Image (cartoon, rainbow, N blue to C red; front, side, top):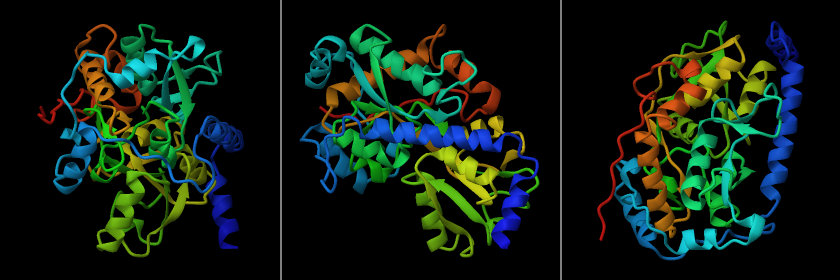
Length: 350
């Protein structure tokens, strides 16, 4: 009876829930099909690990001395190298940069059903991927997008399914053990999303006895698990609900199956823009940085991406700020923490 009452309460006033739930379900199926396509790791097989490189050696050091993970990257360079040469040597129609993205995150990587072209991907991350492809291959459209669920981002890189991930991926110490990250290209933080009528006030005591949704493999879930263990989050908060893609949390919230969502503020703002009955609650309770992820031994590609980020940030006509205004300004406003590209810092290695 409790679940029935909650479902009825959750559905009250949520116009278009059925259509949105159906759309999200179809998008999830499509994403999973794309993820499996081209995978070189069969069931039960361990993903291949990267070979030795500068970033491979730095990964272990970064994990041990990891106070500022966003600074554990290499200095920019526009020089080619073995990884870039291999990308350029792909024959014919396969001569493309293969990029793992999201197709369900409004403003970042998504398919706009109102654009007239339902196959076209749009968003800030999509702009950045096009920019990297243009720099490496001389053609902004020389990019093959693969939809990758949150918890498959690192395996997709290690298996060689993608050259890189450009998918609102937070740079953190644990991930530096498995992949290399570019310099940060966006600043955000974790925040709570809940219905406007909810008694939840933000991250903290009002989440007691509440069911919280996060994406599997996300920093949000990692933070919640750690905070619950050390008593910073009420022990009665239920964090068991995890989903493959963050948008699925919004659907669960709309259906009354969960009470709140915890995710990056940058993503939560987009979800609030999609549904006027939900809102961000309280302030961000972490500071995080998005980076482009790739194999640990792809040093030349890593340096090249860092050079692209420098150029993207300095481009006053069609660079970082133009993309922010195009896709994110309406949902994120002029937040000083997010509306300017982060200042990069690099490891100095010979």
